[in-house]
Length: 134
Image (tube, rainbow, N blue to C red; front, top):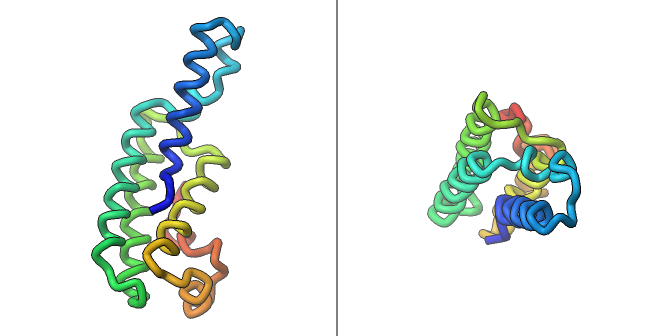
């Protein structure tokens, strides 16, 4: 499996927290990761991605129905995280990270994502669109 975007987000948070503590980042508002990726958002997103990975390990990568069901479940779980009023919504970079991760995770288990998308009249980057609110 590819590295989850949440790992990268957590590294940003840790780096900027350390910079604030060391005084190398002067203004708290310059620590964008702390507001864009609060720990509860990272944890909830990571849990949704972990569930997605587990589903992918159990499906036939040649079954469009199984693959799309796994993508749908992941996207709906991420929608729920994104809609939590206690957290910020995914920003543009976060949305792109999540879409790229879904594509890479599918590829890592043997799904031919371009062919899957084409069979459903989609472009590769549209595979999450019918369920995605973020």
